[in-house]
Length: 259
Image 1 (cartoon, one colour):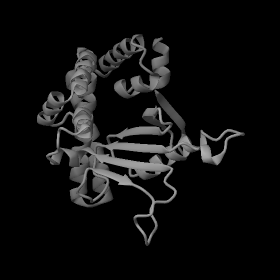
Image 2 (cartoon, rainbow, N blue to C red):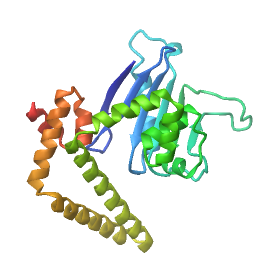
Image 3 (spheres, rainbow, N blue to C red):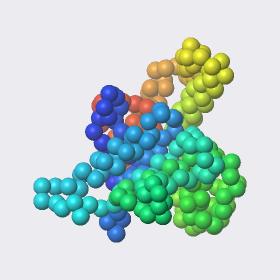
C-alpha cells in the first residue's frame, strides 16, 4: 500500500515535512522514503521525527506496545552526509561492548548519498543500484545498464518520458535545475572565502544570476502563466497538491485557485 504523507508542521519552521513515499508492506513493516536535494543540516532530526510520527500513529487507545510495527526510514540525498566511502549507510542499535547484539531496533535508517553513488562503479545487476541510477539519472551509462538489466526500470523510464514529454513541464524543470546549479555555484565560491559574509554574498549572487537567467527566457509574469498552465494539466491528471507544489514552485493556495 502506497500513499503520500504530509506531516505536522516542524518546530520553528514554516515549511511542512513531506514524505515522498509512505509504504506499508504485506508483512506489516512501514517504510518512509524521503528525498532531499539540498543539505539543510537537519536530515537526522527530520528522519527521527518521521520515525517517531509513524510509531505514535500506530498506538490507539486500545493498542498494545508489542503490536507496534517496524518502521524503515530511507533518506535519498543529493549531497554527502557522512565521511564514509560507501554511498549506502544502514544504522542500527547495538550493545556498546557486544556489537553483534542488536537492541531496540524497531526503527532502521538507511541513508543513500547520490553524489557518492555517481563516483562508484556499482554492480548494475543489483536491483538497488538499478533503481538508484533511475532516480538519479546523472550517469547515462548506469541508466542504460539499469534498463538493460531490468524490465521494470525500462517500463518506469518509459512512463517517465511520457510524463516529462510536455515542453512546458520540461521548461519548469530546467528553470528549477538552473536555479539549483546557480545556488550551488554561489555557495561553493562562498565556502572558499571562508567567512559567513562570503556565504551570504554567494547566495545573493547565485539568486541574482538565477533571476537574470529567468528574465532571458521570458518575463516574470510569463513564467507564472506557464507554471499555472502546468499546474492545471497536473490537476487534470489527478496529481496531489503537494507534488504540484514541488514541480511548479507555486503555493498551495495559488494552485487551489486554479481549480
